[in-house]
Amino acid sequence: MTLPNERILPLPTPPDFLFCDPKYGTQISTLDCLMAANDNIIDSTEVITWNLGGLSYLNPSTSLPLTFRRESCLVQLRYSYYRGSQRGPLTFQVAPRDLRDLAAKVIQQCVTIRGGIGGFGTLGIANVLSYAAQGNTPYNQISFPLSTAFITVGVVKMGKPVMNPGDTDPAIARLLSREAPTASMLGVSGLSDRYNPPSTVWLAQAGKMNRGSTWRWYDTTSRLSYEMAYQCDSKLGAPSIVDCAQIEWDQLSPSSDTLAVSPGVTTFLHSNACYLAISAAISLVLTWAQIRTATSTLMNMCLHLSRVHKEEEHFMQHHNR
Image 1: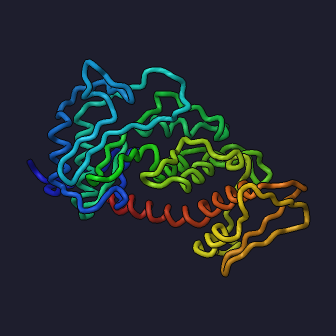
Image 2: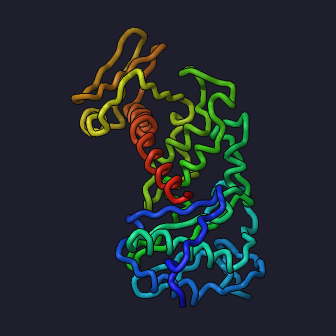
């Protein structure tokens, strides 16, 4: 068996990608992962139909999800699709060698090159991106048929909880955001819009997601998330993420409480270098749960995600040279 550092394997063909993160584990052995993958995923170029989420009694080895174990390493074959899709048989056609090759790429990039950390790669993510890019469609009206399912191959430290990065890794939602219609594509602008363009809502989704957690890219957000519009403006300065988070943690009232707002009256909350101003063009009563949702979304879009985007772009540029 050859180790993957004997030659550099090409990265997945865009829009498919791979991503490495210590949250998927550390101190993973390259040899363990190669044995887990190569001993269980056959080296065949014949395209077969994989059953997603349902057991094929004739051939259980072609039913996903599958997990292969070897000492320090788990190699996980998973799938993701929008759970609101119409019912029907869920399948994916791919040759086992494509899954085997993707596993080798993730092992090389994450485990071998980055010193034993875990990660994942995608296969067929163009299926869902083509629907995320639908024009003239608000977020809550985008239709994702069963054909938008895609596959992930993950490398995880033995002992870590079962993860499905295709569902819960924020990199998926950020990729959807880059492909989805923007406000200009939808022909809308300004804070009076009745819904946000999908690109903005996917950013909000990414802010709620954590690798290995339960919030998925297709989970329904609060209606406020897409019936409000958000805008980042450099003219307002660069507030401290820590200070703004302090407002969110310490100064927002319990979710069931309400705040009456009216034209010409602004409620200010502040912590050191961050100010939160709450105002309205018409008189209305908001719950603090709504204010918390809007605050969290705005922070994720304008503070957190701008930094994360730069980190991910640096990662992609560095490894596509």
